[in-house]
Image (cartoon, rainbow, N blue to C red; front, side):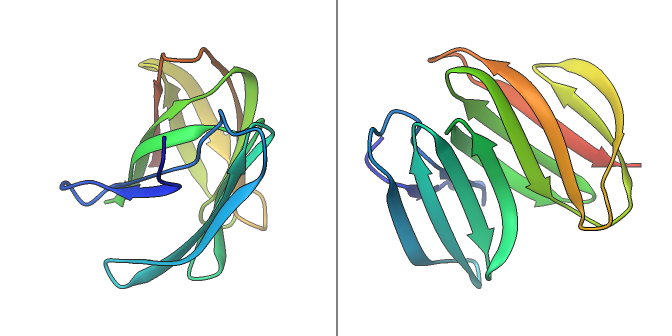
Length: 134
């Protein structure tokens, strides 16, 4: 993947590259009135929107089709192995979460609005993640 942040015709974005050996970053990426910043490599991927935390994974991941609409956040994520994903959502709120089409139940954010989930990833096999506010 050559681009650290990518846009799609459907209004979604993609970002990150878990195959990079060295840390790469891109700042000031403007899209639909917002400014994005990404840092990514094999050990970490992080996305900020308007200087606010959106996404982080350890180890790094590649994300495609990130959409935030009508109380639903969805994206496809690809990586290598057991991965912890942290999302910046609404404070103290409950969400229904599914990964790869499997319902993994309800999860709640903390006071800082962070939702943390673990996903087992295989290179070349993206998993769809859907998070819906209840």
